[in-house]
Amino acid sequence: MLHIKLARSICFVCGIFFLQHNIIFAQGQYSLKTADTLHLDIKQTEKLFLDSNLQLLAQHYNIQSGKALVEQAKKWDNPVLNTDQNLYSNSGFFQHSIDANGNPQGEIFVQVQQLIKTAGKRGKSIDLARTNVNLAEWQFKSLMRNLRAQLFRDFYTITQLQGMAALYTENQERLTKLLSVRGQELKAGNIAKKEYLRVQALLVSLQQDMTGNAKDLNDAQNELKTILRLTGNVVIQPVVSGSESTDMPDVSIMQLIDTARQNNTDYQLQVYQLQYNMQNLRLQKAMAVPDLTVGTEFDQSANYAPNYFGLAVSLPLPFWDRNQGNIKSAHNLVKQQEYLKTDADVKLQNDVLNAYQKLLYTIRLSSSDNSTFYKEYYQLQKNIVESYNNRQINLIEFLDYFNDYQAIREKELKQLLDLRLAKEELNDLLGTDLIK
Image 1 (cartoon, rainbow, N blue to C red):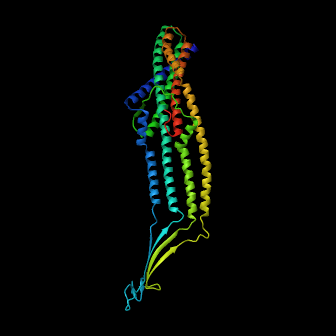
Image 2 (image 1 turned 90 degrees about the horizontal axis):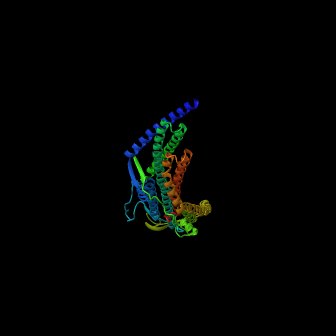
Image 3 (image 1 turned 45 degrees about the vertical axis):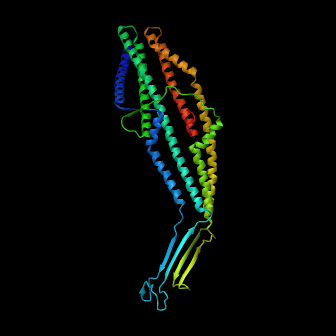
């Protein structure tokens, strides 16, 4: 009697859970139907990303700002005008008249000076500003690379999760029909209560997987919509091929590493940062050479001649300050950056080799033999429910077949996702879409 009551309680709880989940699932289906579905392939998604991402647009202005500083570095220093006029003399203001002898009264002093930078400071400053623009451009590419990698991950993850959702829906329909048939047989007394509960428990477990998958899918959709700057009740439906090419270009690992050195944003940032520091060192050494200021001046009535024209030359004497501290600091920054560049090169080589090996391993798993196996196993699964209803297999065999089928399908979808992401990981490191 106790076992009967326990079985009834379990059945009641499972029934309530099943009813609640069906209501939630129906609501979710209604929400998806009323949402705007946006069908995008990967190229369309990438174009929408490039056109609308605010972070990229903001970084673009940083590049323009750097280019403006290059133009500013090309400018010469403005000449300096100095003047001195007498304010009060001989009981009068601004005396600039002529006396009885024809000599001017009052002083007028005018001087024009021009700073001339020595040791190529101007050219070195221009080089430094140009390198700064290159750094800004590679920072832009780095931001775009990181966002693009996230875009590809989300896009293909959504593809996988939607495939999982379709698998779960397919299995749910089969189990729901099977449970209905088993319910009728239970009423007729043809099967034991425990057999009905085992099938129902399988359905409950499947619905829990569906709920978890739906949450993951919603998170991936939300992240992709944020990257694409989409708002509102929009559902992105990736348009992808059901298969993925397993062809590899005929290139060696050293060719891949050379390609990565030329295009990888993290590595190129270290290269240009080293160039920037070396140029800064040259500029700081040039700053130790004094700049020359030359000019011409006119003086009326305040020199040995009534109207005096002279040449002015000014040159600081570098007795104490020869820019030693800035030179030493710049030298140490160069040494530091040399180590960082070497470290970036070692990391890049290892990352490319690792990504290449992972891609080769993933391609081997996606062999044609496995594809044939999947097709044969799917065909076998179609007959499992019918075989179970016809008592050709028992409950334990049915549960094993059903669970194995779902696990195999999940692994197939995961393997396809791994192949796509492995390609994108290597392309991301190479900085170019070499692997198709």
